[in-house]
Image (cartoon, one colour):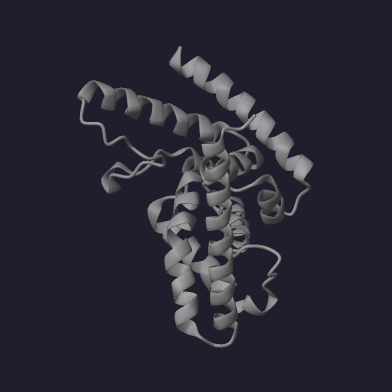
Length: 207
């Protein structure tokens, strides 16, 4: 049985999500009507998450920025086809994932790019780093983040995509199904196998 505070938290979370989708839908309507400022607001709101997804796919910073820009340009041109049954975040992520897949297929040295570690020159990590000051704790966090990054890049593209969208970005199963245009059962299956593989890889690395 759920505790009262847990129920309140879930209700508040659902309310915030509904408010965000309502705000995004209103901005989309304005943008369809020719209000470029409304679309700029959507970009500012969602571009960071899109860039983060691109980087977690192993795409280098410069290419990630270009792909995200291209995804938003495509979204702007296709606004008249926006399906209000879905959230804008689901729609833009679907466009982005398609472009990330194309990037991987078309790049001659795709294997090297998708196995590459985050660029140290940019000081970036695919996962959030700890704010803990203790050097020992920071080293452990860094080693764990590195192990997760390496394991993630060893998943199949399908498994990696499902894992990133669900476990890291927080999309729901039905949203991922819409993004990837696959049945919800397929999403669940890919997540199951991705989790098993991540556990196997991390157990072997961290033992």
